[in-house]
Image (tube, rainbow over all chains, first blue to last red):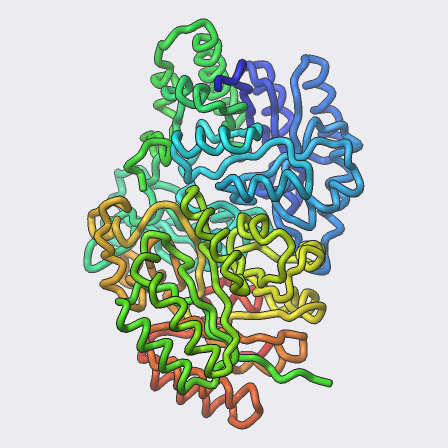
Amino acid sequence: MTAPYLELVCPAGTPASLRAAIDAGADTIYCGYRDCTNARNYPGLNFDQDEMIEGVRYAHERGRKVLIAINTFPRAGDEKPWHQAIDNAAAAKADAIIMADIGVLDYATKHHPSVRRHLSVQASAANALSIAFYRERFDVKRVVLPRVLSIEDVAALIKQTKMETEVFAFGSVGPMSEGRCFLSSYMTGLSPTSEGVCAPASHVAYKECGDCMKSCLGDVTLNQFAKDEPAPYPTPCKGRYVTQGQASYLFEEPIGLNAIDILPQLKAAGVTALKIEGRQRSKAYVAQVVGAFRKALDALAQGSTESFAGDLKSIAEGGRETFGAYKKGWR
Amino acid sequence: MKKTPRLTLGPLFFHWPADKRRDFYFRIADEAAIDCVYLGEVVCSKREVFFEDMLFPIAERLRKAGKEVVLSTLALVTSDREMKAIKDRVKAGFLIEANDVACLQALAGKPHVIGPFINVFNESARDFLIRGNATRIVLPVEIPAQSIGIIAGKTETEIQVFGRQPLSVAMRCYSARAHGRHKDGCQFVCGRHPDGLTADTVDGQPILTVNGTQTLSHGYAVLLRDLATLQKMGVTHFRLSPQDVDMVEVARIYRAVLDGQAEVEESEKKLRKLTGDIPYVNGFLHGREGLAWVEDRI
């Protein structure tokens, strides 16, 4: 089963990034509202309703789509912001809403049945039964697959479910099952699930200790490095820990995911859409990544196998890249 | 009429040798003041083969001792074999604790328990799941008391009140990685760490516990001082998560506090003697960082 076209789904943390991504060749943009309803709730990012309406208009005029991520888990007794966001997304004429919480999905299904629903990676649906659950209960049309699956897993899942899938192609390697990782809140008290913040900058500190530097999240030291070494951002799953006297990147190294050289395999697996991560990134970053993937996809459509990896080497996380879980052996 | 609070024993997260498991559960059956026991492998399906034969005899022994038996399922399901295992368990007639949404699909409306690995953070999610015939909901460890107060009360509600808190689940095996191996050739090194493998920060602070594909807190969650308040909020079931300590004695301490037969302060001192120098945590309950210990009661 080969998908006829790989849709390029690109991040926009700001209206300027949205326009930049579209101009660089994105087929689809995903973005969120400026509050706790989306999983990238960082200062200075995201859209208010006027910006969203304008962004959707900009995209639609150019034949592109906008997906709105409302993909955190509402806190008990405070579900209103999520319901408001769903209502706003419908009013803004979003092409789909990306959700994870069962309660939020239920609300959207009941109140806006005609708005297309996508299942967020935060729902961690990594098997055919889970996908069937969300399809039957909420008529979900697309699933964003967790970053823990190999290409073989992805292909088998698509074959079994015949579901439209979106997979991560560029950004970070998330070793943990998304939406169910409490490591950041364990260290900071702020939750990726409810507040949409993982390793928030407000809790990050770089400290000098003699000849070296330490990077900390909350009161927890997550790494130590020489002053002239690059300092990776202290995310709990990319920290250096000591087990049995040996320091190592126990969960994952500070390394970026880049699937640009395995696009033919992803296409052959039957993937519908490729997701570029980076709503928290700059407009220039977004334009560069989107541009490189556009070139690669256009070349692929014409049967070329030219590599475009070089275009992205300099901007990958930690300056290094991996195929992540897509390749066997990662586990 | 107020219901008697139920003390439960959560699924064993660690890879204990078969004999040790059997002896553990037989002793729980014979001696522990526990009302309900969750069996089954939650972390890694590769381990199941070691335990499969014992499941029915252990379940039988526990039932004969008057304990409810619930079968917990994997927290992250990816393979066809794992999906089939879930379907088989459902068919075998066990009450199931669903830890992956896959399980809800397989249950097709049969009464079940929602495990802590399915996110229930609000009343809408709760209500949807109750409509799907969830009869008990075990809330995620991250949930603060404020939310528990809103969610509990409508159906049986369970909270983990003792033991390391599960913080994440993955496909990758970190026990294997820590031993320089891959998941496919792990040789079950996780079995060398019956209470999990401690991960320290680079400056020597024990911070996390690694157990196969699972990551847990280093500290034990101890919510003894808040049991009475949680009960008032509508929590009906109180979960002890098995650690490599005298769990029968742990159960005795919690039972006495739940029944109003023992003072909290005295009980915490007794518990401390059982658990050595492992720190206690209760931060999540207070809406704080999970690794924190807050002296105040909620």
